[in-house]
Amino acid sequence: MPYNELRKDYLLDRWVVIATERSRRPTDFAKPQQESPKNATCPLCPGNEHMTPPAVMLYLKSNGKIIKDKDADGLRRKNWLVRAIPNLYPAFAPPKDPADQEQIMKSESFGCAVGHHEVLVESPNHDEDPADAELPQLGHLINAYVDRLRELSTKTYVQYVQIFRNHGKEAGASLSHAHSQIIAMPFVPRIISEEMAASKNFWSEHGKCVFCDIIEKESKSSRLILENQHFVVFAPYASVHPMEFWILPKKHDANILNLTQNEMEAFATTLKASLKGLKDLVNDPPYNYGLHLSLNRDSSEYYHWHLEVYPQLSIWAGFEKSTGMYINTVTPETAAAELRKAIPA
Ligand SMILES: [Zn+2]
Ligand SMILES: [Zn+2]
Ligand SMILES: [Zn+2]
Image (cartoon, rainbow, N blue to C red; front, side, top):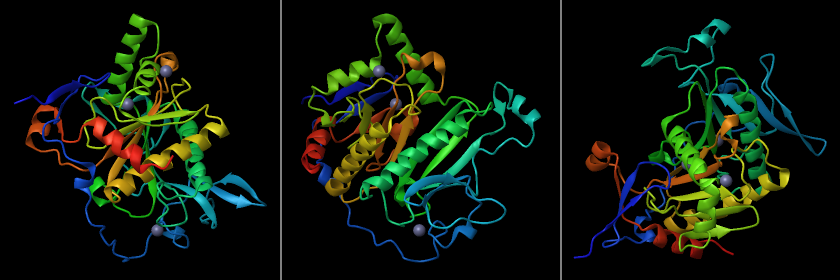
Protein backbone atom coordinates (compact mmCIF):
# COMPACT_ATOMS: atom_id res chain seq x y z
CA MET A 1 0.00 0.00 0.00
CA PRO A 2 1.39 3.44 -0.88
CA TYR A 3 2.36 5.68 1.99
CA ASN A 4 0.79 8.90 3.17
CA GLU A 5 3.15 11.86 2.91
CA LEU A 6 5.12 13.45 5.71
CA ARG A 7 5.57 17.15 5.05
CA LYS A 8 7.43 19.78 7.05
CA ASP A 9 6.43 23.43 7.29
CA TYR A 10 8.42 25.96 5.22
CA LEU A 11 9.88 27.43 8.42
CA LEU A 12 8.67 25.75 11.60
CA ASP A 13 9.86 22.40 12.88
CA ARG A 14 6.31 21.14 12.43
CA TRP A 15 5.37 17.99 10.60
CA VAL A 16 2.07 16.95 9.16
CA VAL A 17 0.82 13.66 7.76
CA ILE A 18 -0.96 14.47 4.53
CA ALA A 19 -3.46 11.67 4.03
CA THR A 20 -3.12 11.30 0.27
CA GLU A 21 -4.58 7.82 0.31
CA ARG A 22 -7.85 8.37 2.07
CA SER A 23 -8.16 11.99 1.13
CA ARG A 24 -11.51 13.59 1.76
CA ARG A 25 -13.26 16.07 -0.46
CA PRO A 26 -13.78 19.58 0.91
CA THR A 27 -17.53 19.23 0.48
CA ASP A 28 -17.50 16.21 2.86
CA PHE A 29 -17.04 18.72 5.65
CA ALA A 30 -20.08 20.83 4.83
CA LYS A 31 -22.53 20.80 7.72
CA PRO A 32 -26.10 21.98 7.56
CA GLN A 33 -26.35 25.66 8.40
CA GLN A 34 -27.06 26.11 12.07
CA GLU A 35 -29.85 28.48 12.83
CA SER A 36 -28.18 31.06 15.04
CA PRO A 37 -30.62 31.81 17.83
CA LYS A 38 -31.85 35.37 17.52
CA ASN A 39 -31.85 35.55 21.25
CA ALA A 40 -30.57 38.03 23.74
CA THR A 41 -29.65 41.60 22.97
CA CYS A 42 -26.34 41.89 21.12
CA PRO A 43 -23.97 44.19 23.03
CA LEU A 44 -22.09 44.99 19.82
CA CYS A 45 -25.11 46.14 17.81
CA PRO A 46 -25.81 49.88 17.34
CA GLY A 47 -28.00 51.22 20.11
CA ASN A 48 -26.35 49.01 22.74
CA GLU A 49 -23.07 50.92 23.01
CA HIS A 50 -23.73 51.52 26.73
CA MET A 51 -23.37 47.74 27.27
CA THR A 52 -19.67 47.92 26.38
CA PRO A 53 -16.71 49.86 27.79
CA PRO A 54 -16.06 53.20 26.02
CA ALA A 55 -14.52 52.81 22.56
CA VAL A 56 -10.78 53.52 22.42
CA MET A 57 -11.20 54.22 18.71
CA LEU A 58 -14.07 54.52 16.31
CA TYR A 59 -14.66 55.63 12.76
CA LEU A 60 -17.52 58.00 12.06
CA LYS A 61 -18.98 59.32 8.87
CA SER A 62 -18.99 63.10 8.92
CA ASN A 63 -19.79 65.32 5.93
CA GLY A 64 -19.06 62.47 3.55
CA LYS A 65 -15.65 61.89 5.14
CA ILE A 66 -14.50 59.18 7.55
CA ILE A 67 -13.13 60.60 10.77
CA LYS A 68 -11.39 58.87 13.66
CA ASP A 69 -12.63 59.51 17.18
CA LYS A 70 -13.21 57.81 20.53
CA ASP A 71 -15.81 57.73 23.31
CA ALA A 72 -15.18 60.28 26.04
CA ASP A 73 -16.83 61.76 29.13
CA GLY A 74 -19.09 58.79 29.72
CA LEU A 75 -20.77 59.33 26.36
CA ARG A 76 -21.03 56.66 23.69
CA ARG A 77 -20.80 57.91 20.13
CA LYS A 78 -23.48 56.69 17.71
CA ASN A 79 -23.44 56.11 13.96
CA TRP A 80 -20.01 54.50 13.98
CA LEU A 81 -18.65 52.34 11.17
CA VAL A 82 -16.00 50.44 13.12
CA ARG A 83 -15.51 50.46 16.87
CA ALA A 84 -12.55 49.27 19.00
CA ILE A 85 -13.43 48.53 22.63
CA PRO A 86 -11.48 47.00 25.52
CA ASN A 87 -12.41 43.35 26.09
CA LEU A 88 -14.60 42.97 29.21
CA TYR A 89 -12.53 39.96 30.30
CA PRO A 90 -9.07 40.85 29.02
CA ALA A 91 -6.31 38.24 28.79
CA PHE A 92 -3.77 41.07 28.94
CA ALA A 93 -4.46 44.31 30.86
CA PRO A 94 -2.70 47.72 30.77
CA PRO A 95 -0.09 48.48 33.44
CA LYS A 96 -1.51 50.43 36.37
CA ASP A 97 1.53 52.62 36.86
CA PRO A 98 4.72 53.17 34.90
CA ALA A 99 6.73 51.16 37.45
CA ASP A 100 4.82 48.07 36.38
CA GLN A 101 6.26 48.41 32.93
CA GLU A 102 9.73 47.52 34.09
CA GLN A 103 8.59 44.55 36.11
CA ILE A 104 6.59 42.59 33.59
CA MET A 105 8.76 39.50 33.54
CA LYS A 106 9.47 38.74 37.18
CA SER A 107 11.59 35.71 36.41
CA GLU A 108 12.34 33.40 33.50
CA SER A 109 9.13 31.53 34.08
CA PHE A 110 6.82 34.07 35.64
CA GLY A 111 5.48 37.39 34.46
CA CYS A 112 2.46 39.68 34.50
CA ALA A 113 0.08 39.56 31.56
CA VAL A 114 0.48 43.27 30.84
CA GLY A 115 -0.80 44.55 27.54
CA HIS A 116 -4.11 45.20 25.81
CA HIS A 117 -7.01 43.08 24.70
CA GLU A 118 -9.48 44.74 22.38
CA VAL A 119 -12.55 43.76 20.45
CA LEU A 120 -12.87 45.35 17.05
CA VAL A 121 -16.51 45.58 16.01
CA GLU A 122 -16.20 45.23 12.24
CA SER A 123 -19.51 46.73 11.20
CA PRO A 124 -22.74 48.14 12.60
CA ASN A 125 -24.45 45.29 10.73
CA HIS A 126 -24.56 42.21 12.96
CA ASP A 127 -23.91 39.69 10.16
CA GLU A 128 -21.44 41.63 8.03
CA ASP A 129 -18.65 39.03 8.00
CA PRO A 130 -15.70 39.58 5.65
CA ALA A 131 -17.03 36.95 3.22
CA ASP A 132 -20.16 39.04 2.63
CA ALA A 133 -19.00 42.50 3.62
CA GLU A 134 -19.34 45.51 1.37
CA LEU A 135 -15.82 46.26 0.14
CA PRO A 136 -15.68 49.83 1.53
CA GLN A 137 -16.69 48.48 4.96
CA LEU A 138 -14.02 45.77 4.79
CA GLY A 139 -11.58 48.50 3.80
CA HIS A 140 -12.46 50.33 7.04
CA LEU A 141 -11.70 47.15 8.97
CA ILE A 142 -8.23 46.79 7.39
CA ASN A 143 -7.63 50.47 8.09
CA ALA A 144 -8.62 49.89 11.71
CA TYR A 145 -6.15 46.96 11.98
CA VAL A 146 -3.41 49.34 10.82
CA ASP A 147 -4.52 52.16 13.15
CA ARG A 148 -4.72 49.93 16.23
CA LEU A 149 -1.40 48.30 15.41
CA ARG A 150 0.20 51.72 15.04
CA GLU A 151 -1.06 52.90 18.40
CA LEU A 152 -0.48 49.71 20.42
CA SER A 153 2.97 48.99 18.99
CA THR A 154 4.37 52.32 20.20
CA LYS A 155 3.80 51.40 23.87
CA THR A 156 7.07 50.57 25.60
CA TYR A 157 5.76 47.37 27.19
CA VAL A 158 4.36 45.95 23.95
CA GLN A 159 6.56 43.55 21.98
CA TYR A 160 3.93 41.98 19.79
CA VAL A 161 0.40 42.68 18.61
CA GLN A 162 -1.71 39.74 17.51
CA ILE A 163 -4.66 40.61 15.29
CA PHE A 164 -7.02 37.69 14.81
CA ARG A 165 -10.56 36.65 14.05
CA ASN A 166 -12.70 33.76 15.28
CA HIS A 167 -15.69 32.89 13.12
CA GLY A 168 -18.41 30.56 14.39
CA LYS A 169 -18.97 29.07 17.81
CA GLU A 170 -16.80 25.98 17.18
CA ALA A 171 -13.92 28.33 16.35
CA GLY A 172 -14.27 30.14 19.65
CA ALA A 173 -16.45 33.11 18.75
CA SER A 174 -18.54 33.77 21.83
CA LEU A 175 -20.36 36.71 20.22
CA SER A 176 -21.96 36.25 16.84
CA HIS A 177 -21.65 39.92 15.83
CA ALA A 178 -18.87 40.33 13.22
CA HIS A 179 -15.74 41.17 15.19
CA SER A 180 -11.98 40.72 15.32
CA GLN A 181 -9.73 40.77 18.36
CA ILE A 182 -6.40 42.40 19.07
CA ILE A 183 -4.03 41.34 21.81
CA ALA A 184 -0.92 43.41 22.54
CA MET A 185 1.59 41.54 24.68
CA PRO A 186 4.96 41.99 26.36
CA PHE A 187 6.83 39.32 24.36
CA VAL A 188 6.92 37.75 20.91
CA PRO A 189 4.94 34.49 20.99
CA ARG A 190 6.52 31.17 19.98
CA ILE A 191 5.23 30.63 16.45
CA ILE A 192 6.16 34.15 15.37
CA SER A 193 9.59 34.01 16.97
CA GLU A 194 10.27 30.62 15.35
CA GLU A 195 9.22 31.99 11.97
CA MET A 196 11.51 34.96 12.57
CA ALA A 197 14.50 32.86 13.56
CA ALA A 198 14.04 30.56 10.55
CA SER A 199 13.62 33.44 8.10
CA LYS A 200 16.70 35.11 9.54
CA ASN A 201 18.68 31.91 8.94
CA PHE A 202 17.39 31.70 5.38
CA TRP A 203 18.41 35.31 4.85
CA SER A 204 21.95 34.76 6.02
CA GLU A 205 22.29 31.60 3.93
CA HIS A 206 20.64 32.75 0.70
CA GLY A 207 20.65 36.53 0.90
CA LYS A 208 16.91 36.77 0.25
CA CYS A 209 13.57 36.69 2.04
CA VAL A 210 12.20 33.19 2.45
CA PHE A 211 8.62 34.44 2.03
CA CYS A 212 9.44 36.16 -1.26
CA ASP A 213 10.94 32.80 -2.28
CA ILE A 214 7.78 30.94 -1.19
CA ILE A 215 5.62 33.39 -3.19
CA GLU A 216 7.72 32.79 -6.29
CA LYS A 217 7.45 29.00 -5.96
CA GLU A 218 3.82 28.72 -4.86
CA SER A 219 2.52 31.08 -7.52
CA LYS A 220 3.67 28.46 -10.04
CA SER A 221 2.45 25.48 -8.04
CA SER A 222 -0.77 23.48 -7.97
CA ARG A 223 -1.40 24.99 -4.54
CA LEU A 224 -2.06 28.46 -5.91
CA ILE A 225 -5.61 29.66 -5.22
CA LEU A 226 -5.65 33.29 -6.29
CA GLU A 227 -3.23 35.88 -7.54
CA ASN A 228 -3.75 39.57 -8.30
CA GLN A 229 -1.59 42.63 -8.65
CA HIS A 230 -0.78 42.89 -4.95
CA PHE A 231 -1.44 39.51 -3.30
CA VAL A 232 -1.01 35.75 -3.66
CA VAL A 233 -3.27 33.22 -1.93
CA PHE A 234 -2.23 29.59 -1.69
CA ALA A 235 -2.68 26.42 0.35
CA PRO A 236 0.61 25.96 2.19
CA TYR A 237 2.66 22.85 1.30
CA ALA A 238 2.41 21.42 4.83
CA SER A 239 -1.11 22.65 5.69
CA VAL A 240 -2.07 21.49 9.15
CA HIS A 241 -5.77 22.22 8.70
CA PRO A 242 -8.03 20.93 5.92
CA MET A 243 -8.62 23.88 3.52
CA GLU A 244 -6.00 26.07 5.20
CA PHE A 245 -4.77 28.99 3.10
CA TRP A 246 -2.37 31.91 3.47
CA ILE A 247 -2.53 35.39 1.96
CA LEU A 248 0.85 37.01 1.24
CA PRO A 249 1.50 40.51 -0.12
CA LYS A 250 3.80 40.53 -3.16
CA LYS A 251 5.50 43.66 -1.89
CA HIS A 252 8.09 42.76 0.71
CA ASP A 253 7.29 44.36 4.07
CA ALA A 254 7.59 43.12 7.64
CA ASN A 255 4.24 44.53 8.76
CA ILE A 256 1.11 46.34 7.61
CA LEU A 257 1.99 49.83 8.89
CA ASN A 258 3.12 51.09 5.49
CA LEU A 259 0.25 49.78 3.38
CA THR A 260 -1.02 52.33 0.87
CA GLN A 261 -4.74 53.00 0.46
CA ASN A 262 -4.59 51.01 -2.76
CA GLU A 263 -2.95 48.02 -1.05
CA MET A 264 -5.47 48.09 1.80
CA GLU A 265 -8.29 47.97 -0.73
CA ALA A 266 -6.56 45.12 -2.57
CA PHE A 267 -6.17 43.27 0.73
CA ALA A 268 -9.88 43.71 1.45
CA THR A 269 -10.77 42.40 -2.02
CA THR A 270 -8.45 39.41 -1.68
CA LEU A 271 -9.63 38.56 1.82
CA LYS A 272 -13.27 38.76 0.82
CA ALA A 273 -12.82 36.63 -2.32
CA SER A 274 -10.95 33.87 -0.45
CA LEU A 275 -13.30 33.75 2.52
CA LYS A 276 -16.35 33.84 0.25
CA GLY A 277 -14.89 30.89 -1.68
CA LEU A 278 -14.44 28.96 1.57
CA LYS A 279 -17.93 29.87 2.75
CA ASP A 280 -19.58 28.77 -0.50
CA LEU A 281 -17.54 25.57 -0.75
CA VAL A 282 -17.93 24.25 2.81
CA ASN A 283 -21.22 25.92 3.83
CA ASP A 284 -19.91 28.70 6.08
CA PRO A 285 -17.50 26.67 8.20
CA PRO A 286 -16.04 27.95 11.46
CA TYR A 287 -12.54 29.33 11.02
CA ASN A 288 -9.82 31.39 12.67
CA TYR A 289 -7.39 33.71 11.03
CA GLY A 290 -4.33 35.49 12.35
CA LEU A 291 -1.94 38.09 11.01
CA HIS A 292 1.76 37.31 11.33
CA LEU A 293 3.98 40.36 11.30
CA SER A 294 7.10 41.78 12.84
CA LEU A 295 7.52 45.00 14.80
CA ASN A 296 11.22 44.50 15.19
CA ARG A 297 13.21 46.88 12.99
CA ASP A 298 16.09 44.43 12.58
CA SER A 299 13.81 41.92 10.91
CA SER A 300 12.51 44.23 8.19
CA GLU A 301 14.72 42.61 5.56
CA TYR A 302 13.98 38.97 6.29
CA TYR A 303 10.44 38.90 7.74
CA HIS A 304 7.38 39.29 5.51
CA TRP A 305 3.87 39.79 6.92
CA HIS A 306 1.03 37.45 5.99
CA LEU A 307 -2.41 36.27 7.02
CA GLU A 308 -2.99 32.60 7.87
CA VAL A 309 -6.54 31.23 7.66
CA TYR A 310 -7.35 28.03 9.59
CA PRO A 311 -10.74 26.49 8.81
CA GLN A 312 -11.98 24.51 11.80
CA LEU A 313 -12.98 21.26 10.12
CA SER A 314 -11.20 18.61 12.13
CA ILE A 315 -10.65 17.95 15.81
CA TRP A 316 -7.19 17.85 17.32
CA ALA A 317 -7.23 14.71 19.42
CA GLY A 318 -4.83 12.38 21.22
CA PHE A 319 -2.20 12.12 18.50
CA GLU A 320 -2.03 15.87 17.78
CA LYS A 321 -2.10 16.90 21.44
CA SER A 322 0.56 14.44 22.52
CA THR A 323 2.97 14.89 19.62
CA GLY A 324 2.57 18.37 18.10
CA MET A 325 2.20 16.55 14.78
CA TYR A 326 -0.94 16.73 12.71
CA ILE A 327 -2.93 14.62 10.31
CA ASN A 328 -4.57 16.50 7.46
CA THR A 329 -7.14 14.55 5.46
CA VAL A 330 -7.42 17.06 2.61
CA THR A 331 -4.29 17.52 0.51
CA PRO A 332 -3.38 21.19 0.03
CA GLU A 333 -3.44 20.51 -3.72
CA THR A 334 -7.09 19.35 -3.52
CA ALA A 335 -7.97 22.26 -1.24
CA ALA A 336 -6.47 24.75 -3.70
CA ALA A 337 -8.18 23.18 -6.73
CA GLU A 338 -11.58 23.30 -5.04
CA LEU A 339 -11.12 26.84 -3.73
CA ARG A 340 -10.02 28.01 -7.19
CA LYS A 341 -13.28 26.64 -8.59
CA ALA A 342 -15.32 28.25 -5.79
CA ILE A 343 -13.82 31.71 -6.26
CA PRO A 344 -15.28 33.55 -9.22
CA ALA A 345 -12.50 34.94 -11.44
ZN1 LIG B 1 -24.92 42.51 16.86
ZN1 LIG C 1 9.76 39.03 1.41
ZN1 LIG D 1 3.10 32.64 9.66
